[in-house]
Length: 311
Image 1 (cartoon, helix red, strand yellow):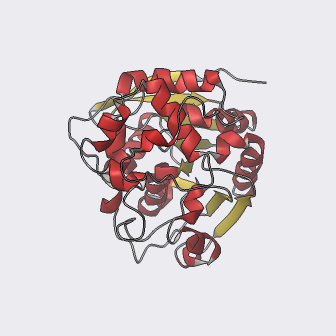
Image 2 (cartoon, rainbow, N blue to C red; image 1 turned 90 degrees about the vertical axis):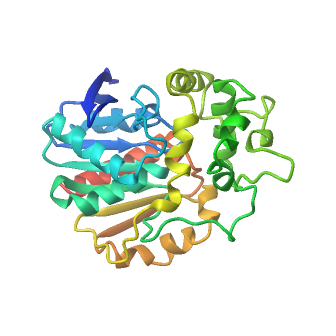
């Protein structure tokens, strides 16, 4: 049975953060952290699944995204996102939680587990392996690779500003759901790589698109572009990192990110094992970058299995 998702604004560290939540939490709490261009809504399937299993599901809009307030500072340090998670747990009197991260949401999820192991029951991440050093695509990816473009002040804003919010979300979902890395050619911008004639992924409806567009109407894209793209090379260096909690890495094998330098080696080559002694890795064979929306039942089964394995 579908349960009603409740929405609240929590005062966290000087900002009002929008938090969606559902479930009574007899078995514990699961906190979901989204990526870009995602929002709390991208976890709708997983929230219902864990709530039905007896957990409390909490999915915030990251600071500056959707219905959450935007900081006055131009850039958000990654440490702020970790502190926001801690603030949410404290505000809701939750002593310990599972963390589930996707895309750039994996970074605060991994970091929270490292910094606050006594507040973490386990961490499951989709699409991005743990990296002990900042991601740096200079020299390894073409100039038209979107993170290299979007970290340039004003570049993405000018590109996006040519179209409606709905069209921008639509284009990014089309591009990021493919198996090829989105790279613009000389004279092109990222938004030129798809248009309204390109069909949406079959698992992403017009109603889903409307929901995303309505949430971004408040925040726009200017701040969400800054976090993470202006900060991706400012991640902490953690060569001595050691996870004290279980870590579960899930990767769609059709995720374009799998083709980024070092990603497949990190997932398949065992690099993460040296940092996470209690590590499990699973693959979704046809899964794209949005695997939790594309194959919700498979991801839900993996997530619930992970939760049950660590009561």
